[in-house]
Each structure stands twice: as C-alpha cells, then as structure tokens.
Length: 82
Image 1 (cartoon, helix red, strand yellow):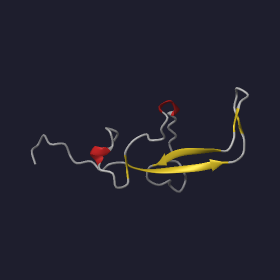
Image 2 (cartoon, helix red, strand yellow):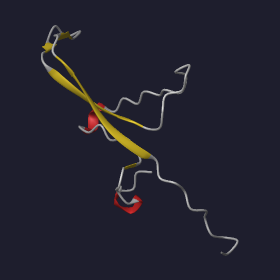
Image 3 (tube, helix red, strand yellow):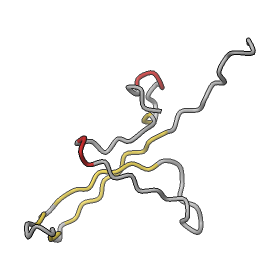
C-alpha cells in the first residue's frame, strides 16, 4: 500500500421501508391524500434514547433513496451515492 492510497471505506447500507396509511391526510392547500404508502430508508439502528435519528426530506426527485447501497449491492453499482 502506498502512502497516497485512500483507505477502503465501508459502504453505508440502506434498508428500504414502507408504511401504509389508510386514514386521510389533510393538506394546507385544502386537498387531501387518501390511502397512501410512505417509502423511506433506514441506516443503522436507532439508539436507546432515540437521539440519532435524522430526517432528510427530498421529495423533488421522486425517490426515497438518499445515500448508500442496498444489502447485496456492490458499492460501484450505487450510482455515485455513498
């Protein structure tokens, strides 16, 4: 290993999740969402006092994938997201 080589990093593993909501969600506009499923990802584990949670809202790209790779996916298949 040369002195200039970057250390190997462990990829961030994303776990896709979904939660279904049957109740109506009223919006500020007056419209509402009915019977919808919210897709999200988790990374790692929530600690005992639940202080390590971070919410990243990025609804403009039509995907729930923020970063990392999925279990079994090679780091180079992640499309540049690490």
